Amino acid sequence: MELSSKDLQRLERASHPRSEFAERGDDGIWRLRNAEGHCVFLEPKSKACMVYSLRPLGCYIYPVNLGPDDTLIVDVICPAGESLTAEEKKKKGASLRRHLREIDAQAKQK
Ligand code: SF4
Figure (cartoon, rainbow, N blue to C red):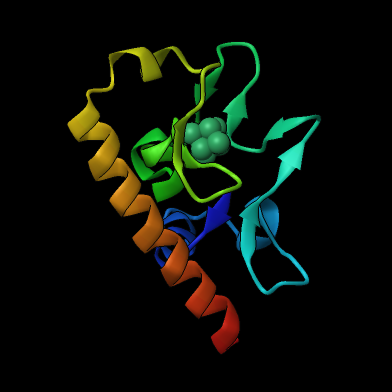
């Protein structure tokens, strides 16, 4: 999951050291770290997100995502996708495109 500067700062302000939850790729983009095959913030037994109220915007937007041809897709493995209306999908898609543009711009700045 790609992270914007706002995502990083929000989690750091809540006393999560960046080095513990994020890593920066060769493309300059920060992403959530995985540990033992899942996000470091996932509590494996309960399947709960330990930072739900502070979760990255991309997690909030999920299960809407972009397909390889830049079309909006809804990840079928997420049951929440079944209740998404066309309007919600459109709004989340617009948010996602803005979010990814912001992340790309931030990666180029640093
Ligand atoms: S919702 Fe929480 S556990 Fe899931 S990927 Fe996002 S930060 Fe990790």
